[in-house]
Image (cartoon, rainbow, N blue to C red; front, side, top):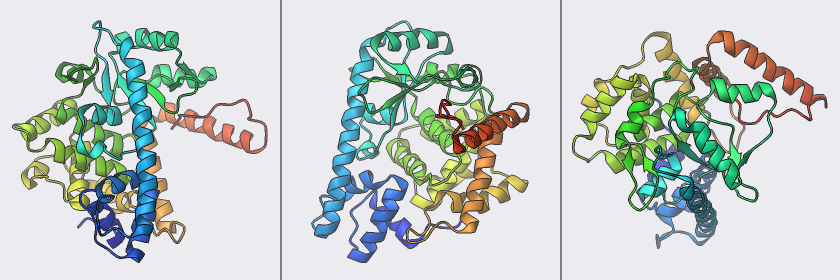
Length: 367
């Protein structure tokens, strides 16, 4: 049986969908867990209108609501600024938070964003990058190694930022690293993408949005405190699950792209922790993990992903689980002959910086 969230964490997840009617001490714990996991904006969106909300809690949630509203305005400003650069020559697909906002999905209300993610065909990557640069966006200066990392091994260009703007812009040509185990030709994603009415942007098909969320959570991250990703998967399921043909298309797409394991993890934990509407037969039809990988994920995922007691530092078991998940993340992102030199170099840079000799190095955005 999958370990369940703590009582307070379960309340937090329920509080993302409906107003909570709990006492002040419980609210104190729920609020702290919400801030730990980046879910306080969504908690505010679902609870601020509740007449049963204690005044002290209302003030905390009002602050979170204002912060998330600012985040949403910054996202909207970036989308409006990039829109004139989109042409009919190639599709420009908004991913993740930008896509959720453009579609007006319910769970996007109160959701914090730190960047805007765009996906363009690989053949158009330099064209779009140059258009952004001419319009004023620029990437941080990188040394030759880091530049090569992005250009040859990653699935995106170096993060860009417009001077004075809050959010970064990540320009992707795929949704998985080109050196990763799950890399696939993204052409089917473009073929099935959907135009956003009144906008030059497109979004992934509903089943591809869910697959991307599962991949981003379980294959392209170390899982530490990634409960927000499960909440996103739950939000996508509540947004799309009732659409005719969604579940058959989802299964077929996962098989076509080789993402069955990632989808299984996403659906399994969303069903177990948020009670997402996942039919049992759909989950049973997907390739579940087996062998040592199944044991590792079953034992380490809850420890790494769920927030621990906010009154105490993470336990040794939690720290060990997060370390194991970080190792798994690296091993899935790069093959050993690239990974070992890469990690050695990063370790040396950190040692140099710690001893005051690495001031000129840039180590941002790397795994």
